[in-house]
Image (tube, rainbow, N blue to C red; front, top):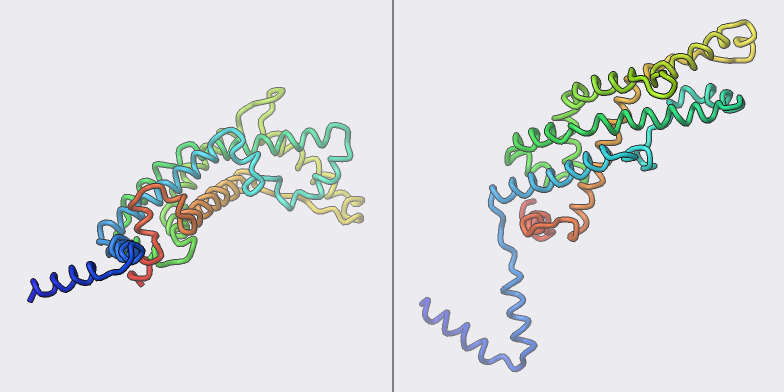
Length: 256
């Protein structure tokens, strides 16, 4: 029976009346979707996540990684707008505020330098169930996975680095923390006076360390999400053949 089937296939090919038909048949054979094994799915997802996290941490830990990127640049807290608006009217005030913004972005860039191993560990712990959930999930499913798995560890890593950077004496022997404390202290003293209260001034009480930590991690996950979306949507961003197969739309349909 098997020999008869083979004979029929051969005769069918010989009966094709044009090279175009032969080419079309060849394409159907070579483009056949090969189902992915569980190991390939897991390995492919791990590779994609490694690419995404390495790219994000390398970009943000570079000089100006935060500062010169409008999507993640850390500005002064919104609550400090009254201070910003008023100090900008004082000669040299705008320069002082600009310097503080540069410093807090440098703090975030420095903190990002050692984040990669934390992501690597989370990737190594990923099992098939995690991989399938990510592959069939939303365009930021992997980013959500990382937020759940690494946020606490990243906070523990970043906080002492932020504390150290904020306390380090820079220009004129004054630290970033001291500069911020002096500005808010002066503002709050004025805001608490009868005149300040009459004019609607409000005290500004912001923990700069907590604020930078929150914004630094927000920017980090934002970059990971952008890289994840790129890998999902753009075949040219996938790099290896395994990644291309894992994120191939036809293969994805087979997994649903």
